[in-house]
Amino acid sequence: MYIIKVKGIAKIPDYVQLRDEKFTLLAYFRVDRPDKSLTKLGLGDKQDYIMEMVNNLPFGQIAKLEI
Image (tube, rainbow, N blue to C red; front, side, top):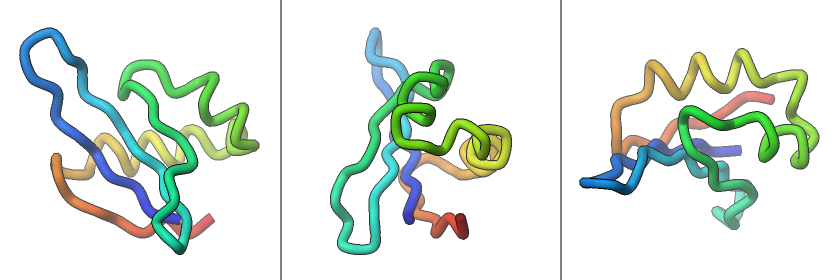
């Protein structure tokens, strides 16, 4: 699974994209509201790990999540 952090502009907030190995979009959520999306995807128990990666990831970078 891959994670991408997207910088928002003006009134558009920052977002996170989670993509699978084929780069299909699995989840798209605001950085400050990951709860519902991660729970719906079945990753609610890994939220702390994912959000730690998000907070350390520069905007526009792609990182591989080992889950």
